[in-house]
Length: 282
Image (cartoon, rainbow, N blue to C red; front, side, top):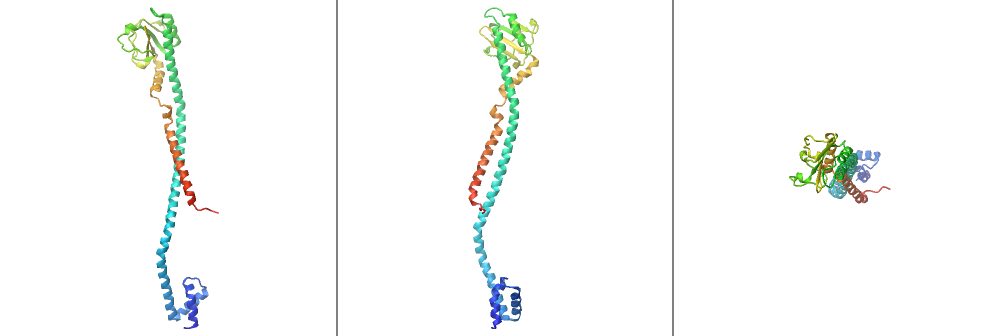
């Protein structure tokens, strides 16, 4: 074997790995063109290198799998963290909007509650004053009852007084001011209105909420609201029996607020447990 062949074969590994200089590469390529033995050795070395790479490839793939799993886990956790972050801010925004909406509705709700209380208190005052104007025995005092009516003439159509024994057909008479269908005015001892005592027949309003009745041991007082005031009475009735409670008014923002806190807690916990897995810079 020529000395030149020894030199070429020593350089072959570097030539195959493309690590030799351009001058050495040209020298090797020129030599193997004219040397069948070195050309054969070069082909064998290349074949052995390819076989070695094929053997090492599965091993490298197996070595990379745990790192790929960790990488995929970190990626999934990152996506989940972004989802929690977006969910938190969205839920917080909805909570703020609902809270503003509830506060906006709370003001008229509070006004309606106050108006309903005022109507109910006024109804009690009317009855208390009407009964205070009645004598313990005998016929009612027309002047005293007219004075009570005049105090509330903007609200009342008329006030009537009955002897309790004259309305025995009604089985249950309320001891507190209560709305009910009007009692026939023909049985009344006295009825007063804007122009004083009313003696002509009265057609009662069959709207039960517009008529208030209260009975004592001997007497019964009944008054009807004016038609112009019935809307106020109706609104007070609806507010008292059918309006939302305070907690119902704020139930939606409260529910979303709790949901927002829950999402924030999960997001904070997720960031805390993932912090040690993130690569530290510096």
